[in-house]
Image (cartoon, rainbow, N blue to C red; front, side):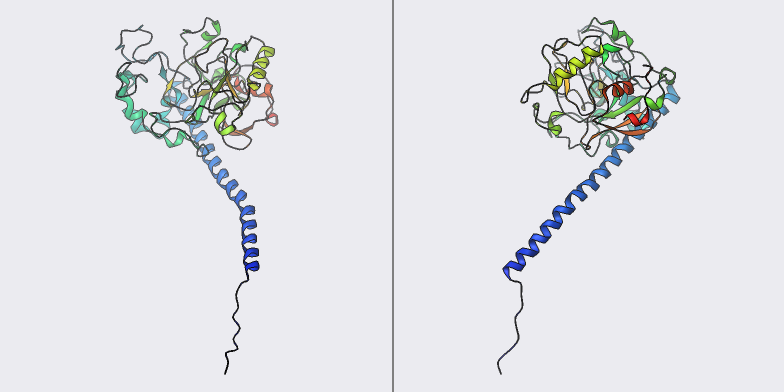
Length: 371
């Protein structure tokens, strides 16, 4: 008898329809998965900032003041035939993240740190500059997980002799409107590069100095790490926000109109302009009073372009430039306030509100719904 069984299977059209349906479902689910992952990364970043806020308050309990944006001068013994003010560190000093190390559950590394050995110089094996600091490289070469935001891809060269950081202290609002008006500021400034008396506003900051209120004054915020290649203006947030750009002819005056003129010049930097360099997000242990390494300022709003004031200094991004906090979180940055709370500040925050959040004693009235 003939076999009457019917062989069943998918036709090519049916198979293509199923594949198309699966592709549509994946396309619908992928954004949700990515959003969930970013939410988890952002939560971790918020927790890191809360740890920094708590560490700062524990530091206050022990030392009576906030950690300094730069402990200048370097405490190391002078081992070079250079001016005594430079010491063994090319003039650089200890940054705030070293000072709170002991309060970030890093007691072992904190005990291994020797303040007498300095913070910077020639990288091994180069011996043309200060080398005393090599005695601290065990500490400095340690990448601290709590100093990194998982949202940052950290596009740096694997051969780089730098340990990264995604958080910095608040230097204050536009410098020429009030000097070091923030909370994590240098204890002193040598004024090597500038004759401006505003550099003398460097000081030790206590809680009592924050007369605007600790809930209205920023303490720490985010920053992206340097890029493996030099970014260009208009290349996108992930690349462009890792560098700073020159603003030839833009002279910052000591008025709000002058500060806004500078921001306009920064915003209008031509697409394709190559960045001058990157100062933020590397060497978490090392700072200099005039520059914004491992610090930021409340000049340009979050995630806006960073620019040096080329008319005043052509070397790097310093206190006269705009060193905005930045991140890869959609729409803004996380910020730890002086009361230890962490809030999300939108890129679209009003400029005057942004400046007010950066000053510890500006007398501004800021409501929570303003940001």
